[in-house]
Every structure is written in C-alpha cells, then in structure tokens.
Image 1: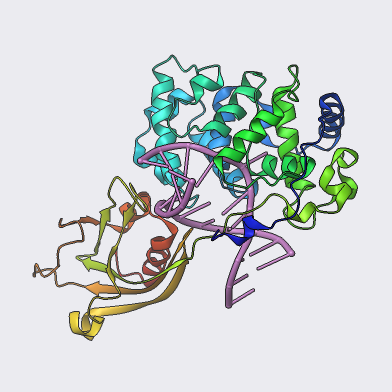
Image 2: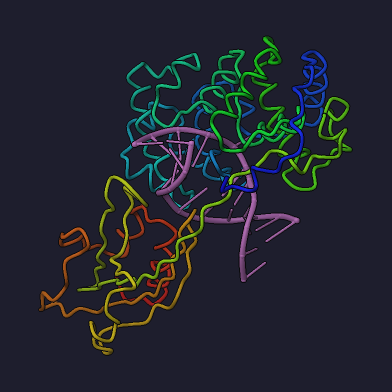
Length: 366
DNA sequence: TACTCGTGGGA
DNA sequence: TTCCCAAGAGT
C-alpha cells in the first residue's frame, strides 16, 4: 500500500442499523429552520438549478454567486444561453476556473434548446448531457423534478461516512456508489430535493472537514463517529499528487499598438481560452532573444493550478511596425493581433490575465 | 482507476 | 508557508 492515509488499520466498524425516519425528521426539521438562503432555492425551473449545480462543482458558493447572477442576467432562459457564442460564455465564465464546465454548459444548452427548452426530467436522462455526472444528475432530478434519488457530493460523503463510521474514501467512485446505496432507503419520497440539500447544508455548516460543530448537529444522536469521538477520521482521503513546478517566460508582443494572443487548443489546460505567448524555462534567457531596448519588464508572478505551479516572468516586447520580426507562436500560427478594447473582450485565464492587467496599467497598447 | 482540469479562501 | 478543499466530470 503506497497510500498510508487510507491504510490506518483500526477495526472495520460493522454497518450500523439505519433509522430512515429518524434521519429524515431530524434533518428536514433542521433544514426548515436553519437551511441556507440561496438564490437558486427561490426558483423551481430546471435551468436555474442546473446552472447553479454546474457552477458549484468544486467551487465555493461565495465564489460562484456573482457568476450565477451574471449568467441569469445575460441569459434568462436556456434558449438564450444556447444562442450565445462559446466565446461569450467563456468570457462570462472568466475567472471561475475549470473552463470545460463552461464549454459543456454551452453544449448542453444547445441540446436542451433543441428539445424546446425542456431538460430531461429524470436523472438517467440528465446524466446523458455534457457536464452532468452522477452527482449533478441526482441533484437536478431531485430538486427540480422531485425524483427520489441521492445526490452524493463531497459534503454528503463526509456526513454519511461519519454517521455510519465507514472507511469510505473521498473521491473514490466505488465508495460514492456505496453511499448512494446506503442513502436509497433513506431518501424521503415527498421531499427528495430538500433532503439532499439539507445533507449538503449540514456538511457545509455543521459537519465541517475540520473542527465539526457536533454540538449543533441535528443528527448527533444517530452519529456513530460522534458517539466514538472519531469524527476526524472520516472520510478517508487519498494521498495528494505532488504539484509540478514549471517556469514560464511570458512574451507579450506589441506592434502598432496591437497585442498578439493565441487561442488554446481544444484539449488540455485552458482549452478554448486565449493566452499570450510563452516559453518554457529550458528556453534561452531573455537577454539572448531580445535586446534590452525593445522590451519592458512586466514582473514576476506565481500562479497555482490544481497540480501545477507556474513561476512566470512577463516581458512586453516592442516590435517595429515596419519589420516582420515576430516569431511564430507555439501553435505555429501567426497569432491574433488585438487592440486594447478587443483584448478586454476575449476570455483569458487568471494565470495570464495578471499580465494583461499590468499591460493596461503601462498604457502601451491602444 | 488514476489523472487532469482553475481559482480562491481558510486553518 | 503549506496544505486542504470546495454542490465533480471527462478520459
């Protein structure tokens, strides 16, 4: 076993007897009094529920909130979103991260628009749509269509792993399914959406990853981990991958007041977004490439991705308008030359937009 | 299955 | 500083 964090070899707890009615009553009663007031809970339509669920994937509510409001203002109905361009959707998503979510969001909007704006009213149907996995299908189906089906996210894994004191591992698909199975007889047929959201609220406000507030938990009397004082053992976690260190030299070419960018490939990091040119650290030093008189130091910046860490040095390269002395971009293309206004309108990830902001502050492009 | 894919906040 | 992790999905 290479993963010692999963290995801890205390006794395996037997699966405790489940008290479905006790869990339902305590949880829903608590939810009715102490559930969070969130904007998508004031709506019934599948579009708003779906939009919120996609944005909230691996994203904290406070971060997603302004994006959610902006999308509904720009595109009040799913048919409006379907009519937007992918670039417009990515621009509205700019800064929220995991950009494949935005592209799948747009694809699904077009599919649903082709169904007269009607989402499939079941988890099985929703699951077929781009960007909708097991959790999101269960969430939308239970909240918008009242299907009695679990929606097991990270919160629910934590709550149920503690409640049953089972060595379930966060992020392991087989264990997520075990929790779905465990929950199936517990989901109340009359309020499945409220029940699922109550579990998530409980995980987010009481059954916290560290220092859980068990004294304020409505399920404490039913919780095996709480009775043992072993809350902090559950759920188990995978050993994290090590973060790769990468050094980049970002080159922002400026000619006749225009700036060169490139659109990233369809797959991989930051796909579909625009970026400035960059070189890997193994490339020659900047002094051997560009004379000092033709460049402006844009400073250093460290950007942290999920498991990459970019140490970037930015340079503004001032090209003579009469000369065609600009090298080919990484993709072997000439690139796209944009004015400042156009540069503001294209979607660009935070990692690179840091230098866009510094560029604007210098007032070199028009 | 394990890895990839962003960004920000909190302990 | 460093680590964890947040309404996960796609491959």
